Image (cartoon, rainbow, N blue to C red; front, side, top):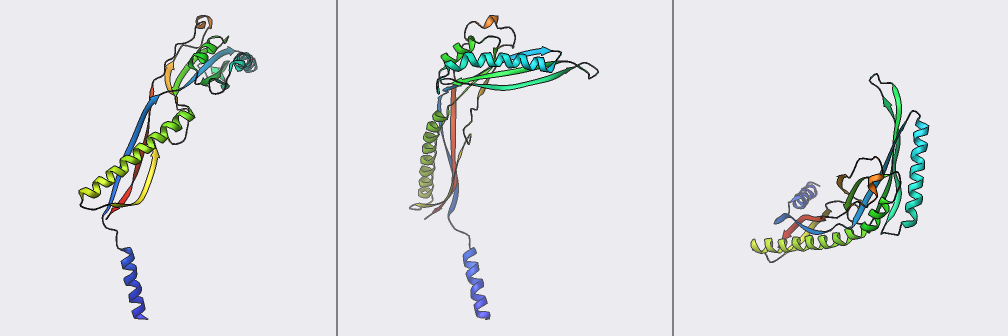
Length: 228
């Protein structure tokens, strides 16, 4: 019985012995591309003594904007949908409600920057309050695959280099993690700031000039290898 216990202890010690010649390393790959997605927000603000009246006014503005814009929507080129909608009390210095203010938004987004900008300029009673650029789902996925391939290639190259420098003939991959900079897809708009105050529409007859920038997608590969 004692001999069996001793053998078991020895086996456990042998199993618990740390692995030798294990190296932790990481590598990254980045791809920079032109942003191919525009998101433009149109806003309207109304004030009044009644919350119901303000809400109804905003409702009519949004409905009119959607009726004007939806026929121009076309797949990924231009999408149209309503945005935020809220009515809030306005208070005096004593905290009493002295009126109501509401704000409503309609959102245009897509690949066709010119179409979106021109459509926004034609909407009555709403103004461009903000816009931003990013990558479409398809564009991001394509770039992500390129960045992943680059990062994995860099990881393998560095692993081979380390094995050679330490005097080994090769290595075995033990564990690996692949992480993207952004994780799952999201519009991730880079805000271009306030285009103009939400006020009268008279000065919005011409389209707002739009010009996208560039975006960088980065993938990091980390893990451990055992040299042999």
